Amino acid sequence: MNEPYNDSVLLLDKPLTWTSFDVVNKVRYAGKFKKVGHAGTLDPLATGLLILCTGKKTKEIDQYQAQIKEYTGKFILGKTTPSADAETEVDATFPIEHINGEMLETARNKFLGKISQVPPLFSAIKVKGKRAYEAAREGKTLELKAREIEIQEFEIEADNFPEISFRVICSKGTYIRSLARDFGLEVGSGAYLSELRRTKIGEFSVDNAETVENMVQKIKDSNEDL
Image (cartoon, rainbow, N blue to C red; front, side, top):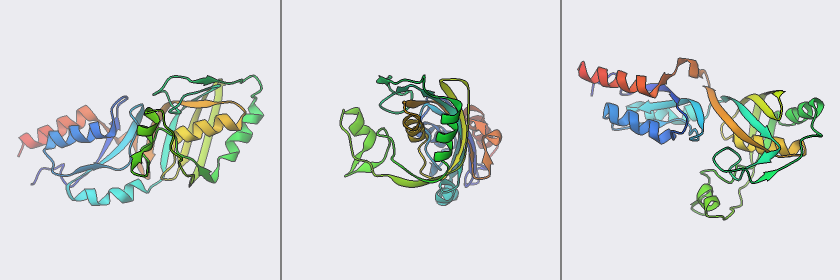
């Protein structure tokens, strides 16, 4: 197959509400590729950089997944949800009147470096063959083990308090929903992730990514030129 987008690394900007597999399937169908895979899942309510590999390049997926990631987004302090993001409804509220700038800065610093993090209940991690999110949606709770991750940079801005804007650079395996949850606990309150965008994976930037629609059209146009 001489199709120019086969055996390629494609940078896509995943739209809101799409699953990562929605993007993979759209590209696979457009190019009739035998092999397409993505290098790191983004939740449906997250947007941003999704690396797709086609053909022989699918063998390189693991090396892209292992690279550091950069995210931007927003936490909402004073409320929690079962999923730790906006996928589920608020299930509890907490005081925020005691939170000041010094407390936020102290909390921010505690998450820098290598830390232990428990994945969110609504995650794809398997425990005894069952996905954690499947159990959570059935009202059950699986015991998820903490794992070591690394936060290289963590910036916050609270001009629109109790909304906290952030930028974070982190290692593979970091859950930003867990970071939001734990940040809320650290300031004696609660928090959930209200907005998330992946901006970088290693040296790859979302600034160089194509929309799904543009990429699909480019692939279709290239097929017509063969």
